[in-house]
Length: 311
Image (cartoon, rainbow, N blue to C red; front, side):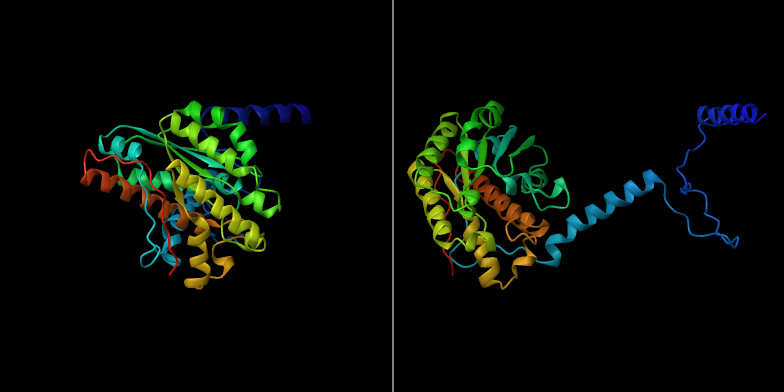
């Protein structure tokens, strides 16, 4: 008898599913049906799985929208404005042609420390450029791999970067070498060779130096050496540098932002705000370069080193 009732119940349940009846997990109710408390009073409706997902997405979008409002992302002050010359990117965007940007690097390119993959700096940068150039097809590819140093990045340069036929390569490097206290004497030659390969493929290059955070500043000598090394290679190869180390130093020392306002508790990786502001300033630099090229057509010049002079 019990088996017959079980079969009957299964059949009824199956008919309900086939008829489109909603199915809920234990303790879950429909967003359209009020949950009834033990006292018999109707409690506020609780959203189902889809409703919760929508609310989570809205909440994330809201946090993303106001993250730079809560702590303003100010551009570098005075004569220390960041600038760059990106002739290929400028020419193609001004001509309405599609561009491909590849972000090569380690964990701060991959986005370690963010609360969502949409908050990584390549994702933020893509959003900013698409808002500025809504008719352009802009692709930003994230090739960050946590823990990697320059030799590993150079080793995968072809497969991770050049095979994508990039118009711009943003190469973040040096942090792990500094934090680990490793010898950087052979790094310059490897970076120079890597930049030369990228340029030979026709792409613009922006190098990103280490972040200014406790784990890096604790190795002051190594950090300063790495920043200088990257700048010298960029000058030699007529590439551009976004001086992240100096920009973040200004956040902390000039704007008096505590480290925890732009980095996570490990003292190494940035948080959502840190990545967002970094991406914003980098995007502003690209947009400025495109605008300057448009104002002076036919004057494509080799990539110059970004300059940043502290106040």
